[in-house]
Image (tube, rainbow, N blue to C red; front, side, top):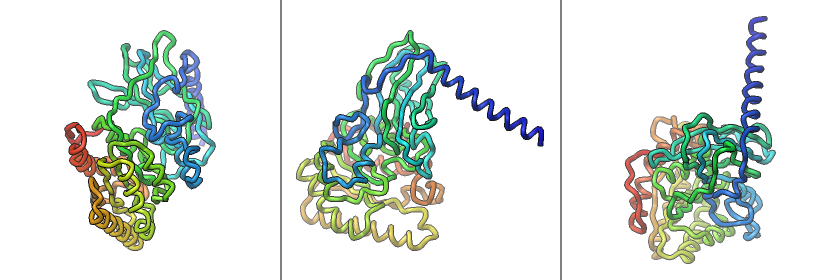
Length: 372
């Protein structure tokens, strides 16, 4: 018992010292507000740099949609620095942590640095209360670095500051991604349940292709409400991906799909619109109620796609949801939300289809099956 108690005390002391060292390390750095650098990934410009959409311009949006749009899913800070250490200070809300999400994905930060023209993971920071500070990466080689710091997936963030060595410089980076591909969808698009913000599937497809897949994931929603459809029609994009079946009932799909698609088409003629079926949820492997519900949803969206084609809606495409997570039932956290393996499998299935469609409208890069 004595040995166990001693070991526990040493563990607590070690954790306390680790936090102390991290805090002391940030004391020697200088911090720059992220707003003074470049924040990329916003669907629409607005007063708050950390909100995906300025919801004050869309008064009729449901309250839950407005709140979700304040989450920083898909947003990232672009900066260049010669520092050998990169730290951050940031604040989030006091909202209860989301189940099935890691603290880093929920309220933390995720850093990538470019090496040999590829974005490479460099470090992550988990929250330590409502406001946190942490060294994300240390002991790097000297020299200029192109950095991409992803913000939290499932919370609103504020007061973000980037820390570097006093002798080093920092400057705003240019947006490294071209085009704007709006991905409207549910919690899966928003990033549940990737382990880090940079592993949400729109972010991974962005780094893999250089095309910017904008994250308009709305957890528990994406039900194609008229007010949301009007907002989407106001967002300028080079392509639209509608991954909005998972939370929509068959009745909602039949009532709302045509308005959403025609609204986009009227506002943006000649731009490709891709309609996706829901992933086939792994929870339906044994639960027949889940299996039947997803089948009905997917049949309903296919029916609406066929109706729209018959009505003469052009530049409209359809992607089926079978086997997006694989066939071994290891691709989800809870039978619904993909884990990192599940997202990887989704990308391997979806990205070649997206690029095949998009290359008819704008230049697309070759895809070699790798994502980073």
